Image (cartoon, rainbow, N blue to C red; front, side):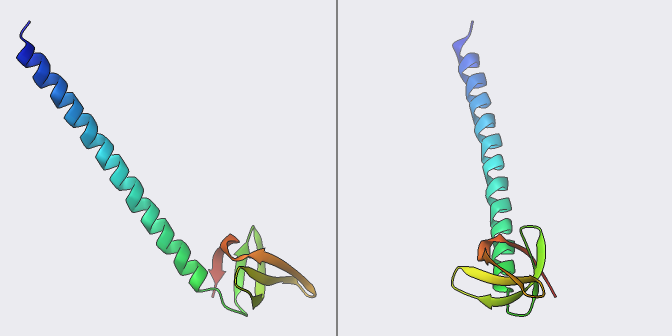
Amino acid sequence: MNWEYVLYSSTMVLVLALLIYGVFIYQNVKMMKKSRTTWVKIQDSVEVGKKVLVNGMVGTVKAIDEEYLSVELAPNVVVKAAKYTVSKVFD
């Protein structure tokens, strides 16, 4: 058995595995960055008076604190929810 061929083939397998791993990591980072920018955009668009989707409930934002929102789900029904739970802002 020629050891040069064994060394060459195992090196090629290692390089190919690292290349596939690198592409996988790049795609994950790219997807996470896109998700983060979408989430920041949603968080920045929350304003008093806008309709929002919070944990599956749709309501109107009545007040905004540093970490929480007061959301009116029905007349005289106001819940306090964390800002990060807003998944959609309706125009």
